[in-house]
View 1 (cartoon, rainbow, N blue to C red):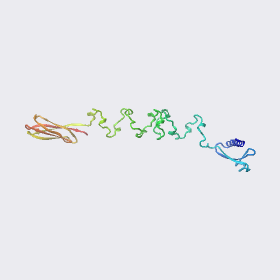
View 2: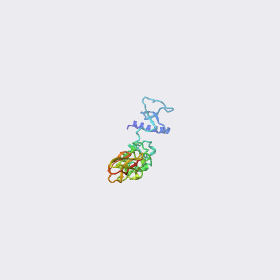
View 3: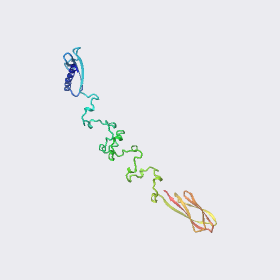
View 4: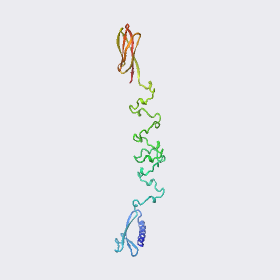
Length: 266
């Protein structure tokens, strides 16, 4: 460094002290002229001072003091350890890219904070194992889209928590029902036996229909005969609500009781 440059730097340092004493908060731009022959400087544009250099041999210089630091002038090496706390960080300044994988533990999450986090703010890799507990999740914040396929298993469902409202229509079929699990108490069915007494002519085949009550469905039917040689030719449902028995009576005319088993499925 030449003597010329050292002189300029010394002069600028002295003028910088003067500028800070004037106003350390507001940025100021100064103009001055350097006299190479004697290594001196004089200011311009201040009250009582010239506005241009007094000689063509004098060199004009400018500089600024105060105000914000230039962009990028503060590097990591210039920041003391633990110097940056929450008050220095702007809202929303820290996103997923700034968080190291596994850095967020359960102790770092306040109760009810999960659910208010914006999509993409926190990745799975950034959460330590066991960091998100029930207390950290806001009520009503977990939606179907937040659950991966097969994420909810039987172990994750508390006993007696599934009610009729939770089961979709037609969701339960025969594969979901254990053998012998359905008894009479589980069925909303009422059974009725309808009987009719008919006079059956001898030596002929006659058909006898038995009708269920209105709104009932027929399940089966039969006949009770005191004529030992009577033969049932057919016994079958005639419709959803009636049963038909075809009977041959080879002997004399006699009374027989016919019946149908009906069900109220309402």
